[in-house]
Image 1 (cartoon, rainbow, N blue to C red):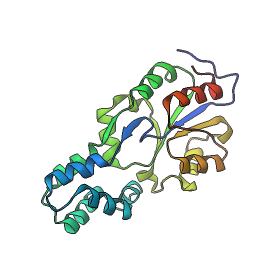
Image 2: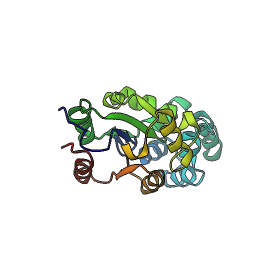
Image 3: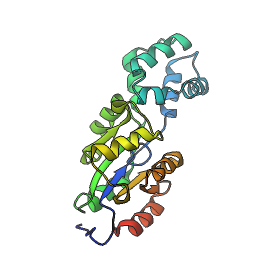
Image 4: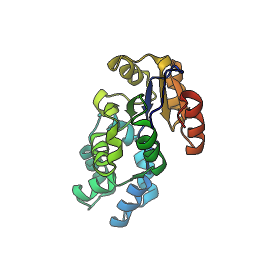
Length: 211
C-alpha cells in the first residue's frame, strides 16, 4: 500500500534485527549442545557464554565463532565437532510473522527508506538471509561485525548516520533493547521500543501515518 510521508518528518526507518525483524533465543544453542555433551549442562554453558560476553566479542569481530568453539571445547572438554557446534549456534532464530507481514505489505512500497542496524556476526546474518528471505528486503545495512562496534556504543550510530547521510530528526529507529533506544535518542533519532507488536503498530502510526 502506497503511503504518503510528505506530511511528517520521518523519511528513514532503521530496524534492529534480533527480536525485532526475527526472534531469537540463545537457549536453543545451550540446550542443543548440552544434549550432545554429558559434561556441559545448559546452565553452565549459558553462564560462561554470557559472563565472557561471547556474543559481544563475536558481534564486534574481536573473536570468530571458530575461536569461541575452541575456547568452549577446551573449557568444557567438548566432543561435539565444529560443524554440529556451528549449526546449533546458528539455529536459534525464528520468524516474526507479524513484522514480516508489516514489512512486506505496508513498508516496501511506502516511500520510506529502509535500513538495518544490528549487533550480529557473519554466521548469523548469513543464516538469517538464507532462512528468512523477507529480511533481505532491507539492503542498506550497518552490521556490528563489519564496523567492529556494537550498540549501544555511539560509534555505530554515527557510522549509520554518516554512511547513508541521514538526518537524525528524519530517522526512526526500532529496537527491542532499552539501552539501544536510549543511546539512539542521545543522537537525536526518533525511536520505538519494540516489546509488543500491537504497541509498535500504534507507535509507528502516530509517527508516520502508516496503518
